[in-house]
Structure formats: structure tokens, C-alpha cells
Image (spheres, rainbow, N blue to C red):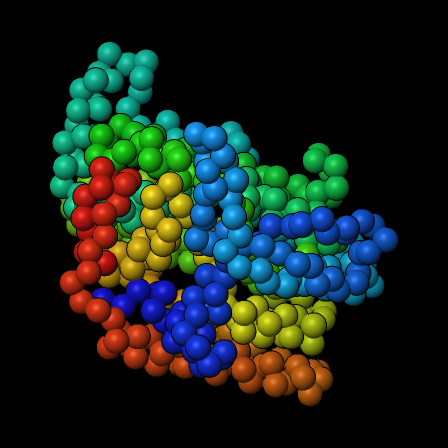
Length: 412
């Protein structure tokens, strides 16, 4: 079965004339090397020499592997948004308070991971854990790989808050800023934090997975970070988060349906509850972009085109467990085969967002804006055609050993 990565290679080949993973959905994340990006540089476009860590290669130093060598070097643009655009986001402070913060829930009314797990203070705790473990025996190994991958993605939350705080005009300048944008970022992070906690504890209790390998993967992933290529621009940043929140809503929704089919109704409830959170967050982010299309349609349209031409990188594309240099590619192949998250979902999300923002009907665009509009409106069918070709070329019967499930082989 073709994975979403196969589609990436097709799209990369069309754009760059080669079949290159670096040209597709999963661009490697670079690290800064001596870039000076102080306040005086704000608003100028910087091309910074960056080194990537995909695949992560370790260099032996004594008896421990502590340094990672770059796989390739690329240039990256930073602070591409003109400084005068910052004022747009300053002017939206009151709007964000009245229209975005309403999509947050108070802590007292929020669910907590313990609501779905055996109570360690109860006399029946051991029996409840036994019941959980018995239910989990019905879950196939390939489903566990998808569930673990989703959990690891959620556990890399520090990276995502860091990413939001790179965005000019909306970042949390102090760590406890009272602005609406900063409040949203912190409270969004606090809500999202429960997702990884809940899935982590469930997987720990089920006894079906190698928790130490999973924990290593999380540490590697948080350490490597991510590069969504948002260029410190909130236009690009909020387009990216709109796409990603819908992607996680779809992924968790599909794991919920699969768990229900396997008879684990509690796990289905867990995944469904997380999916509902993602949907609520998607509503907030898409509302921000809708507002940007209203007040600055040309810049927003050009940003939409830019993001889709660069391809939307998945948040966990730098996954590494200390063994598999292509771990994310293998995980995504299993997710594609099971239907948890597919290349077709990628196209469906794009099509959904185009309709959600009425992109086809937006007017008052420059000539470049109209070309960008045409590009994004025509892209989803093209992606589906590429997906069909990728599936035809995909090799059948390949397997991969996943350290997360004690190096058991899983069909890709």
C-alpha cells in the first residue's frame, strides 16, 4: 500500500525534477548556526545557513553518542513578514479576545486523563488494570504502531509551543504576557498537554509496548524540534496550524473507530475525546485565517499558496528511536495502510479549507494573488491523482520491525 510519503516523492519529482524526500511533505528540520536575529533585524528576510538532522546520525565521542552530524545543508528564510504587518495583529487583540479565547475551556470544566483511567487510589485498581490489559490484547500490532506514533506526536508539545512563539506580532514576549495571542498559546498548550498524558498512561498500563523505546523517541523528537517553514510569519503559522489541527482531528477520529471495531470501547472514548479537542482548536485557527482573508486578502492568499507549494510538513517528521533512520516514513506507511491518516486525507483537508474560507470567491486580489488563488483551488484534485500513481508504484509486502513493540515486524 502506498504511504503518504510515496505521494511526497511524486509531488517532489514534479516540482524539482527528482524524487527527493526533502522536496516533499516532510522537509528536514534545520538547526541555527550562529544566526544573529536581534530586534534590529526584525522585518527583513534572512537566508540563514542551516544544517539538518534527517536522518539523525550520531558521532561517537568516547563511549557515548552525543553529537549529531548534519545530513545536508539548506537555506531558510526568517522574519519574512514586513514589519508594518505586525500592526494588523496588534489591532486584532480585542477581536481575538472575543472570538478566539471563547474556544478555550476552563480548567474546572475540562476533562482530565484520570477520568478515563483506572483509579490508583481505589481498591479495585489492580482489577481495572487487568481489564484494560485484557481489552488491549485485541488490538493488532499495526494499530499499536499508529497509536504510539500519535501519542509521540502529542508528547512533542514543547516544540509546538516554541513554534508558535517564533511568530512575529503574536508571540508571548514574557512567558506570562496578558495579550490575547499569548493567552491563547499558553491555554491551547495546556489543553493539548492532556492528550499525550492520557495516551501515554494508557499505553503504559496496557503492557503491549516498549515504553523505554517510546520515551527515547519522545526525547529525540523534542530535541530535534521541527521546521514548518513558517518564516516567523503568523500568516503562514496560522495556515499551518489550521491544517494540522484538522489532520490530528482526522487521525484521532480514525484511531477511535478502529479501537471500537476491536472491542475496546474505553480506548475509543479516549481517542474520540482527544479528536473533539482537536476539532475545537481547528475551529479557532481557521477562524483566525478567515479574519485575515477578510482584512488582508492578498497577503493571506499568497501565504496560502506558499505554504501549499512548500508542502505541509508533519509535526513529528523528525521521529527517531535510536535505531531506525526512517522511522517516520515507516510509521506513516502503516498509518496509510490502516487508513488512520492518508495522502487522500491531505487532499481532503486542503479542499475543506478552500471551501471553509470561500477561497474561490475572494476578490480584491493582485495579479499574483489571483494566480495563487487559482493554484490552491486546483491543487486537491492534482494531489489525489498523484496519490493514485503512488499507490500503483508502491511495493507490496514490505515489513519493518518497530522498536516500540519489541521489534516485531509490521506490514508497511
